[in-house]
Image (spheres, rainbow, N blue to C red):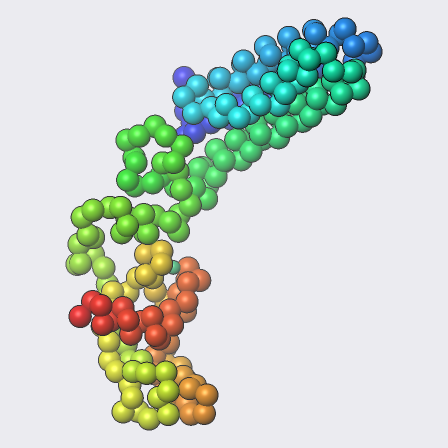
Length: 223
Ligand SMILES: [Zn+2]
């Protein structure tokens, strides 16, 4: 058995070739009986793509074509159904290939909670890992593993530019949305609509924005 994470790319490619090799130009209606048979054999070979995970929806375009044939719809309709089936099954197979590539280059990563379960959902986008662990992970991450930072931020949104309105808060230096590291703090100006106050600000590399209001809430909840 070949090595793959979700879908066997070789098997997908072989199936794409096999399905594309079906000649969709049909001269007389009676020939569709043969095409239904040909396409059925081709889709049955799709199980090699991944026997356990193969999405049966990919077969749906074939069943639509076969049912139309059984209803004895007119030839032009059958011609269309055959062409749609070939096109849609190939498109789906290419998406499976792309998904497998995503597991290779890190656009999808193993869900740390489902490592032992051979199920599609064990692959998720990397920025969901932290959230997944915090939400369903049970045991909290060891505090020693998480860096903390003390920063100086406005204690309220209407700070009037008054330095007495600064508070010093110590936070776990991770993004509360995705669990990624927070950005490096630097001195910035907070503008309350009329006055400016010098305090700490940071931009998270993950792109999630920490508002001072959210940070104050986080600080109060952690205290
Ligand atoms: Zn984030």
